[in-house]
Length: 235
Image 1 (cartoon, rainbow, N blue to C red):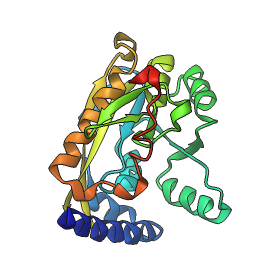
Image 2 (cartoon, helix red, strand yellow):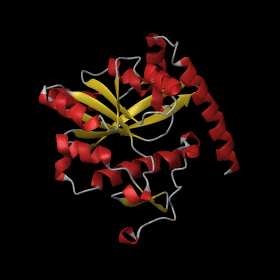
Image 3 (cartoon, rainbow, N blue to C red):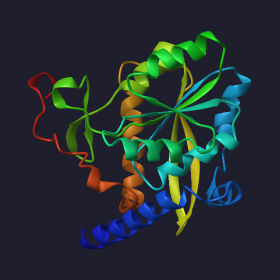
């Protein structure tokens, strides 16, 4: 645990530097530092005229996924929670929208993507889905790393409502400042799945990533803070 902790804080410092560097790094450099060896897993859905819900965890350098917009035909949206600090909110939007992605708040998500669907636009929509919802607002609890926790299910719900394919992306650190991202389809037709099956499958893949290299998970975001608050209905 001490070894993982030390390596994690080294990685966390690298992420801070990478976030700052994101403001000035060239597009050419970014494309060298974040690669997509199986990008065809995403691009198959443009051929079948299907939009995508793209799910990931706080793992590796997930913030650099925005260069993906240079490799796909879908219009990119990223769902985020608006920050209270106006300066940092503006800074985050500037970094994440650098490669022609569009940031939308959680409250804007459904209406924005419904309009896009009605206009016939193909969209690819990023969700960092391993956050912890408040226990009294959670619709689903699951076993994550051996602990019963509440889970956000919004990505799965949206995919079913708007009939979008669900794809998981995993970021792997190759060396310092260099990453590759691979894609795994969780559901081509999400309405064929029972409620929360897609969410459960997502967390299993996150667990697999963590077991392979735990130092690159964002342990500081307190994913297990509601571990002792499981309602009776979910036990």
